[in-house]
Image (cartoon, rainbow, N blue to C red):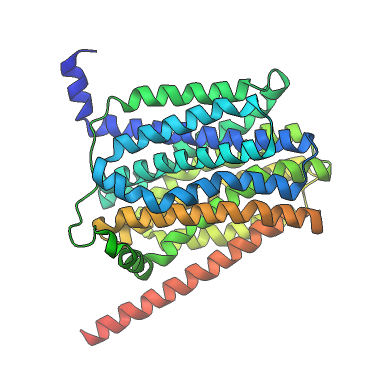
Length: 404
C-alpha cells in the first residue's frame, strides 16, 4: 500500500468506522468464546455452579476496575493508543489460558481480559458516538451492536473445538486479536471533544452527577445487557447440563441463535428508534423480553419451542446496549459523552458480575427455571425504571412549558 493511499485511508471516516466495527466484532468473539468454553471446562472438572459463576464474573470485575481510569488517558492520548493497549492485553491473556488450568489463574486472566475489553469498547463507542450525527446515530450504533453480536454469537461455537484440542479455541481468538491490531494501525488518532470546564479531576464527581440527572435510565440498558449476557453464557451451559438438556444443542444452536437473532433486528430497531424515540423502543423491548423469558420455564424440554423463544428474545433484547448508548448520546451534551460511557461500562460490569452469582445460586436452590426467573425478574425491574423515568421527564417538560 502506497504512502499516499495509507494517508488517504487514515483520513477516511468511512474506513475508520468500519475498522472500529471490526474491533468490536473481534472483542465480542473473544468474550463469547471465553464464557461458555471456560464454563464447560470448569463444570467437567467438578467445580460448583456458584463457583463457576464467580469465575465468570471475573471478566466483569476487570471491566469495573478499569472503568474509572479510562476517560483521562483517552482525553490525553486519544482513542487509538487505548484501543491498541486493550488488544494486546486481550490477545496475550487468551493464549495463556490453556497452559495452567487452575481456578484462580483463570480468575486473574479473566480480569485482565475484562480490562482489555473495556479499553476497546469504551474507546470505540465514544469514537463512533461523537463522530455520528443524531439522525444516523441509532443506525451506526446498531451496526456496531450487530458486529458485537455477530462475534459473540460465533464465540460459543468454539466449545466444539475442545474435543479436538483445548488450545484451539484460544489460538483462534488470539489470532483474531492480531488481525485487529494490524488494521487499527492504519487509523489516524483522534481525541474526544475538549471539555475545559469539566475535564479537571476535581470535577469528575460533578460530571457523574450531571449524567445521572440528565440520563439515568439511558445507563440501565448497559446493566441489563450485562446481566443478561453473562447469565446466559456463563450459567446456562451449567444449568443445561444439570437439567438434562443437550449441551451441544445449547452451545452450538441455542446460545448462538439468541445472539444471531439480534443481528436481524439491530439495524431495523436502530432506525425505528431514530424515528419514534429510543425510550419507547427500549421499554417495549424490556416488557416483551420479560414475558418471553418467563415463558421459557414451561417449554425448556421442547427443543423447537425453546429455540423459537430464544430466537425472538435475541431479536428483541440484543439491541439493548447499542440503543442505550444512542439514547445516552441524545440526552447528554457531547462533552459529557465520555463520562456517560464510563458509567455505562461500570453498570455493564456490575450487571455482568451480579448476574452469574445470582443465577448460579438460584440453580443450586430452586433448580428448574432458575435462569429464566433470574433474567425475567431483572427485566421487570428495568421496565418499571423506564416507566418512572418517562413520567418524570414528561412532568418536568410540562412544568417548564407552564413556566414559559
